[in-house]
View 1 (cartoon, rainbow, N blue to C red):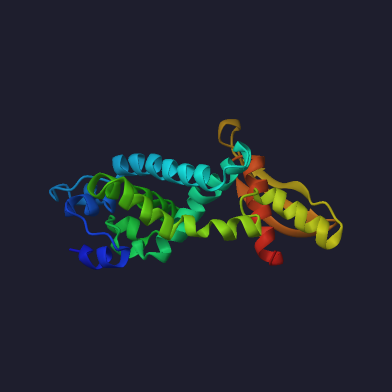
View 2: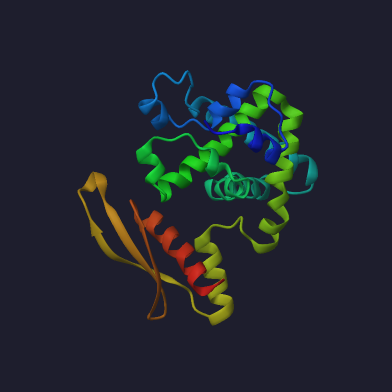
Length: 229
């Protein structure tokens, strides 16, 4: 069994109910293979943690920025609590080493694992809230997540990637990006698209998604990485 006491030291959280901490890391696939483990899966904790996280970030932004309008605070909050930021934080805290997964899920290291990690971070927040209370939970979120806010504001990371790529492209090369469907397949109820983003005739990047919009967002994200913007 994994030694969660090492994780407690790393997180700076001392749980009274150790089972709650372990539950936060228990993916439902693990229980399918270990039905007699006396554990519960983490989805209810994730549900709670999602709400606690949003409340703590909202409260912080409301108090810290009394002059900022609701729309701007909403964008900042979304940038802090989105799956990408939660995944980044989960990786920084080394949560991946403590996941309880089925043998099949352990082999999966792509997007599915990323979603599991982001969800586990929320489940951890839920467990901390139940076991340690609101204040400890708030301190933990401030130290590990809200600390990223200045960088988000400074780099404009709260803007969606299509807006960011357009701003950068216009500023750096005087060109407005255009998007074109390169390939589509599947029945109407289950379409799939590959979209290319172009600067003039240069194909900068492609993105894939179950809608044109989703594929365009993925393409713009890839374009920002390729260009180093």
